[in-house]
Each structure stands twice: as structure tokens, then as C-alpha cells.
Image (cartoon, rainbow, N blue to C red):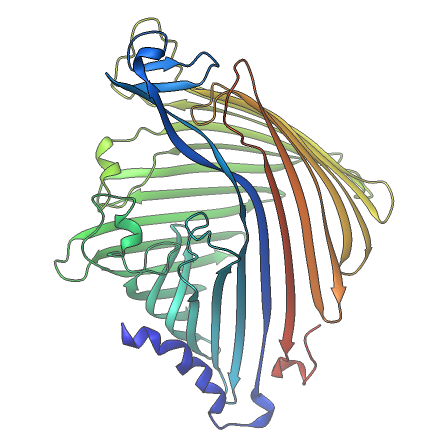
Length: 487
């Protein structure tokens, strides 16, 4: 659409609007990200079925590789050539003050490029330049309006759209934000009818959609904060629903304890997707406890086929205890949770021990040995249907000054009977650091991952090397800071 192509130039053109020199200005930051990955391509291969032992569809090669067989051949995946993937992202964020009181423009543009011809490996590289956000804003003490490409963040999630919003500060401690426009696919900045959806969803939406809703917040007393969110998506031509949702939340402070609750309701499907109640209480001697119960059912928009499978939800109870020493140099935490899944209505084959619950445990801590040295560590164990996983992380960070640090990290985890990659162990180690370069900040690091299978050999090579490098450069100044540059 032509008007969307003209959106960014129109915003930057606000710099030319005449106004008081003291109120004009701009600031922002430019960030360049470069990553490098060493991974193996997956190649579909086959062997004659007559040479594979056993019978049926699922069999194993003599080396333990699982294969899927037909009458004539058996197929399997093996590791192909090693690929060096180097995606590069360039982000530019700009705030512009026009000189007119209350009038501001904001743009966040991303450029993408890759070294070599590996666009099929890294997603979205075909979109070389994209406006993630670009809007004009005008605000006064009790209202604010925006128009352009906007990200809407609420308890229902993160949605982006091309349209407008209006924020009002009403009497009796009520704030109201009303928004609407042409809905964009979440995380893609593309219309719903884009090929990016239809290529992975055979029954993708054929029509684009409008997005509309409001977020109302009310704080009747200082100890109580509440919010109510309503949002609806419907097709631009036929008016059919894509989603119709409602969410509410509340937080109450009672002495030193905090009680918070949340509810998400799918009006179109008549399903409560989330009901949550949590309590945080100080326990004394540096301890703080938090308990939470919730009921969760997955939400799917109406254009996708996945909601037709009636996904079951789960009930969950969680408990976490945190502790901090009086000096703040030593802290620790421990947590646990239990999930119970609903009835699927399916009868498993006799002899299969399919469980309908899951549980998890975890603990960790941090210690400041010196002013410049901090040690962190954590361990987690999780077990459920189809898989279990346990492992931990450790890190040591030396801080030498503002924006100057060096950290060494290590990770190890083990999976059993996991559906995607089978049973295996992963060990990883690397370094990460940052240093100031004038007003800019340079960050970088590298991690090495070693994967070993448990209980059976495999011809898949899942080892990886990952490296990253970024440079962030601030520029401009805020006219509200009396001309002082960003620091």
C-alpha cells in the first residue's frame, strides 16, 4: 500500500516544521548486530526397505538411526554440509521534537543483510528494510494521540497495526486508551493475507483484518490498581471474526503482602484462557515467598485450524522463595511447580504409561565476592509426558567500570525421550563482554555447544558455534535537558 511506503518520510519531514528553536531537536540510537553460526544442514536420505531390519513403518538402521519406511524405501535425516550463517541487522531509532509543544515523532527502522547466500537459513532476511514502528504523537497533560505504525502492549499480548490511538486521563483516577487500525500479523509487520503465513499454514487467512480495542485502568485507592482490556479483530471485507477477547487484572497491597489476579477470556470461543491468583508475602530474615495458582488453556485465533483440535489446558500451582542478605551481596532462590492436564477424551493403547501431569524444581543464587566480581548459578529439573530435562547454568562477571565488563558462562543440560532430538546431553561454554568506544558501546561474545546422544548412536551432528557482536551509538540531544547531549 502506497500510504505505508510514505509513512517514514512523512515522519522525518517533521524536522522541517518551523517552531521555537529551544523546543526543536532529535535523539536516538543506531545499533548494529552481527551474528555468526556454525550449523549443519539436514538432508533427507533413503535406503531400500529390504535392507532395513524389522517390519512396519517405524524401524531402525543397524547404527540406531530411526527411519520411516514405505513398501520400497526407508527415509531418514542425516547431517549435510556445514553452513556458516552470518546475519546482520541494523536498527535505527529516532525521536523528533518539531518545535510545536507536545508534538513528537518516533521511528524504528530495521535493515537486514547477510554475508553470503544463506537467506533460506535465517528468517526474514528477504525483508531488507522494514519500519517496525513509525508514528506521530501529540500530547498534553490529560490526553495523547498517536497515528502511524504502532505497537500495542496489553495483557492480551503484543499487537502491531497501522492506525491510531488516543489516551485520556479521566476524573476519579481513570485512564483510558482507545486504539484501532489495520491489523498486522504478529511479529511480521505484514498483512494477514501475506504469503509468509500461507506458506506454513495451508488454511491461512484470505482477508486482511481490522484491529480495535481499549485498555482502561482504574486506581480507586493507592493500594488497589485494576485494568480492563477489550480487543477485537475482524476481516476488512466480510466482517468475519478473527478474535474477540477480554482481559482483566487487579493488584492489591495489604500491609506488606501483595495479591494479584488476572483473567483472560475468549468471547468468540467462550473459553477462559487464563485464570491466575498470586500472593507475595515477606517471611522475615530476608526471605520473601510467592505462591501462585492458575488455569491455562491455549488461545488460537479463528482463522487458524489449530483451535478445531480442542486443545486441553492445565491447572498449575507454583511456589518460590527468595532470600537476600542484609548487605545485598548474597542472594538465593528456590522454586517448584506442579501441572495437571485436562482430559483429552482419547484412550491410549494398553500398556503405554502416558502421564497427564508434570512437575518442575529449581534453585540458584548470586554472590558478590568482590566489588568487581559476581558469581551466578542455577539448576532446574523438569519432568512430564514425553520428556524430562535437567541442567544448570553458571557465570562469573567482572565489572571494571561503566559499560565495561567481561563474563564467562557455562551451561549443561540433559534430555530424555524428548520427541524432537531424542535423549542427549548438551555442554556449552563461552565468554561475553562489553566496552565503551567513546559515546558508543561495543558488545560481543562467543558460545560453543557440544551435543552427545544417550543410549544410541546417531549420524546427526547437532554441535553448534555461536558468536555475536553489536555496536550501539547514541546521537542527538533532548531539548527538555537544556541542550545537554545523551550520556
